[in-house]
Each structure stands twice: as C-alpha cells, then as structure tokens.
Image (cartoon, rainbow, N blue to C red; front, side, top):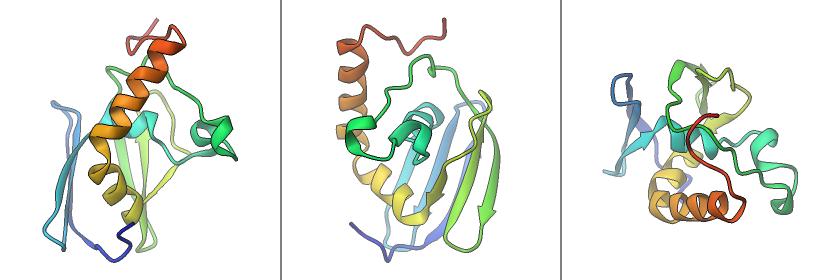
Length: 121
C-alpha cells in the first residue's frame, strides 16, 4: 500500500457526485460518492473484523454534503444520508482509487448475493 502519496488537490462536483483527488505521485482518482459511502472506513460499514463487513444497499443517489479536514492526514466526509463516522485518510483514498474496479465489482456481487439493490427503497 502506498502510504507516502500526499494530496495536491481534492474537489467535489455535486452535480456528478464525484470526489476527485490528485496526489503528488501523479495519480488522480475520480471517486463516486456512492462508492465512497459503501467503502466507508467506519466500523458501521467495515465492522471490527473482515467477517463483519456490511454491504450497504440503497446508496445509488447518495451525495457528499461536507468535506472536513482532520489534522493533516484525513478528511471526514458527510454524506446526505447523514453518515459521517468514517475518516478517510490520504492513504485510504489512494487505496480506494487504485482498487476501485476490483472493490466495486466485489460490492455489486455482494449486493446480488444478498438480494439487495443500489436503489433506495
């Protein structure tokens, strides 16, 4: 995992619901709010053990309402479904960007296995 990449810019497009993060290693990631919400590093989503991982349904239209710096190592994202308990470290955002395709496919498969939908009820 790359723990040395430092963010140069972070911007949110509320119309597209995309958080773009540019890092000093030349990488730039366009991270959908839905993806960030379902991959939140919070215990509510991740649990305290990998076997406790939750598949959060109904987030297709979720957006980000606030981006709050936490020290110089992370941001707290507040989503419009009121979820705000995960701290996204720079290393975590870099990891989510690098692994986006794999993680997203795993999430979609997990929803399907559980009979859940990306659409809100």
